[in-house]
Structures are given as C-alpha cells and as structure tokens.
Length: 111
Length: 111
DNA sequence: TATTAATACTACGTTAGTCGTAGTACGACA
DNA sequence: TGTCGTACTACGACTAACGTAGTATTAATA
Image 1 (cartoon, helix red, strand yellow):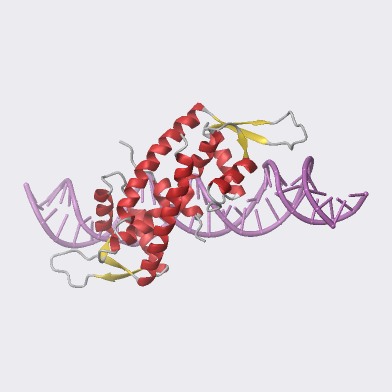
Image 2 (spheres, protein in one colour):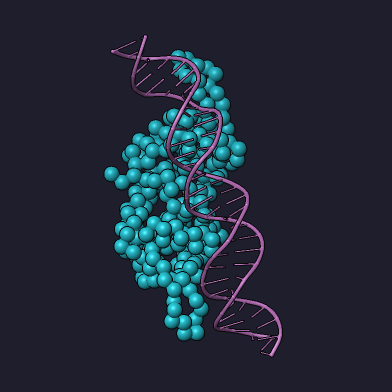
C-alpha cells in the first residue's frame, strides 16, 4: 500500500492539526488518531512530530494550551485550542495549498 | 501576490526537476528559469536548493551528469539527464502526489 | 573599449522540522 | 500481576533548504 511520507506532507502538518482544532479543543493522542483514521491510514503522524508541532504553534500564538483539571476518571491531558491568529494562519495556508496544487500539477501532469 | 514557500513545496522539488528532465537533458540555470516561468512566477527555486538537489539525485542514481565539451559560443555547463531509476522514482512520486492531494483535501476542505 | 548584466555555477555554515530511541506514568482489564 | 492502551517528554541525529559570499565566463550596452 502506498502511504504518504513525512517529506511530502511536511509542509502541511501544522495546517492539518489546525484544521482538526477548528472542531474544538483537542489533545495529542486524539489528534493523531483522527489523522490516521481521516487519512484512511495513509498518513500516520509520528508522536514527536505532533508534539513538537504543538510547541511550535503555541510559541507562534496559533494555539493555546490548557490542562483538563476536571478529571472524571480520565487521564491528565494537555488540550490545545486554536486562536484567532491560528485561524488566520490556517486560512492563508489553505490559499497557499490551492496555489501549490495548481503549480505542482503543471509539472506532474505532463507524463 | 501569494507565492509558494519552500516549506510547502519542499517534498516536490526533486519530482519537479525530474519532470523537466523528461523532455531531455538540461542544466541548473535552465531548470530554474523553467520552474519560474512554468509556475507563473509563483515559485522560484533557490540556486543552492537546485544544485544540492542535483547532487543528491545523482548520488541516488536518479540523474547522471555530463559536460558540454562542444562549446559553440556557449558557456561550459553541467548537464543532467534522467536515468531509468529516476523515471521510476518520478512515477512513484506522482502516485504519492495524487494520494497526498486527496488526503490533504480531506482536511483542508472542511472550512 | 570599458563596464555592466546575465549566465553558470561552488563553498560553507546555519536553521528548522522530522526521526529514532528511550523512558515515564496512569488506568483498564484479564 | 501483568500487559495493553493512553498520554505524553527528553534528547541527539539527520537532512533539505537557506543566506551569504564568491568565482568566472559570455553577452549586451554605453
């Protein structure tokens, strides 16, 4: 089965994560499961990649984190929510994606 | 004007270069001009990126280089031609592109 | 004819994202 | 009691792309 290598998806990890956060706050493990299932198991993000993306994006102000203090039989987690700045960044990356798609196809399609 | 950042196209530089070499042997400067014009100036590859891609791909056996000994008023250049292995790699990357496109759109489109 | 612009590279150290490996800790279930 | 799943964190390695700089030849222009 063909899967997606980290090299080719690299530029879109942040965008994918932000997109999933549009639905509401989430945390590492949940995000990684969602990426796996929504991609039809074609892309499995590495834990280290995911958590370093969270750190990077928090530094950049695209996401904000909080702890789930109200643990009702659950485990302690670090939740992330998307910020307004993150929403803006997401929209820009979507536009860039449309453009990238167009341009790459101009080269790819000529086979 | 929106342009394409190196981060998002990163995974496809080699594929784009190989694609242009399908037309026949070429060299650095020519490839960079072609990328610029074919992309509608939306993507301008850096010289260092381009030449290091050539080196990498030659090491991997995707391209082979030769000098233009027969200079007729032209400059000395290093030409690259795509190999069979490179053609195979190109085809694989095209398939991976189709898949990546599908998967990324699954996330991007939900806005 | 002198100078500038365009061509065609090469060298080198830096940065940033991903990776591999490893380890911690808690809860559920058998 | 032990294993599996969950939910992370730490750390060093790797590599593609970057910025900057410099070299050398040819073509165009003043």
